[in-house]
Image (tube, rainbow, N blue to C red; front, side):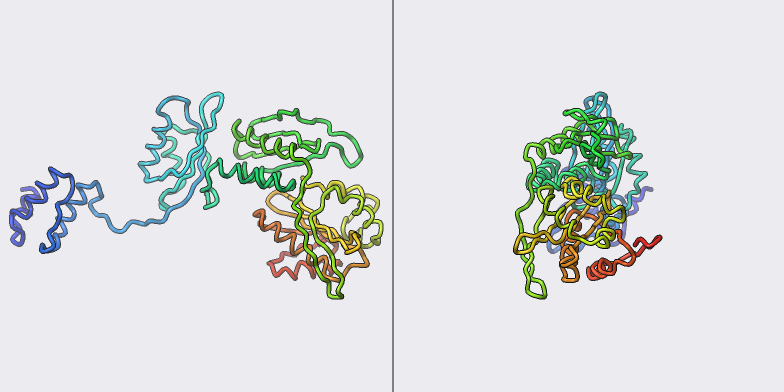
Length: 405
């Protein structure tokens, strides 16, 4: 005797109450409506309806936690390959939020943004992708910022680059993900020209891009863990070309600060057009001030300024007096995932709060770019810099080696 026959003769359930849902489901594919006056259906009656809908026999409250993933995989350039891959992911209850295709000479790189049940391990996702025909798969966690579609992301980065020349390295990093960008000037500090300037159209070598910098040097972008695609190369080259066409530019914002003694200074962004004033300020600084800032031969300080003021390597803030005299510079220099900060204040204007104000603004700029760490290198006896860093109210890690802090 089958379980169904046993249920049919259950003493508390008349025969017609079992036949109704069975007949109804046969015609309609789902459980029948329950009249308001009818009692709640029995547990096994609910189970029958769940089975008809394709749910597991025992379907307790499932975990609704999900995880976002960014995935790249290479598939054959044949009809149906994408459908097979999507079907394999759907079999694991994976939701595809966005898809980009990067054509190659042979095959296609498909880039997905996925939302998967948190209980699914990474290896299981990789096995599903392999079963769907994917190879050379790369996967990493994503976050809410990745939910922006590719055209919107590129337009946003182009807008930022158009407004500020210092944004190009940051825009390239956000466009290409985790990568290292080296900006090489057209000439060395000794005046020698760059030996291997890339052609105008640039060079793509799997994990390395080389583009001609609008300033005449070269931009080298490296991503060892993931080869670049021709599509990414074209996007990066378009951003660099936009920067080249627009020429030097900085935001026009200026802030006037009133010092404790009543003097006013104006803080604004600076670049190589402030080079003459910066050199004049360095000439007025003492040897001690220059040594604390540059940690090397004092005669070389002037040679670094053209590099430091270039938007390619970071951002610079300058403090000018009401008479137009430059009295302080603060530099924010990109260094991979970290950011270096440096200050120099003319001797006569030290201990008035200018350095601390510049530092606070530079750190805020670093936070806006997504930098997770800001560091400064100075002499251990530079109590002014130490005090300014402590005044930020951020966690500090002190490292001292041979008098360098």
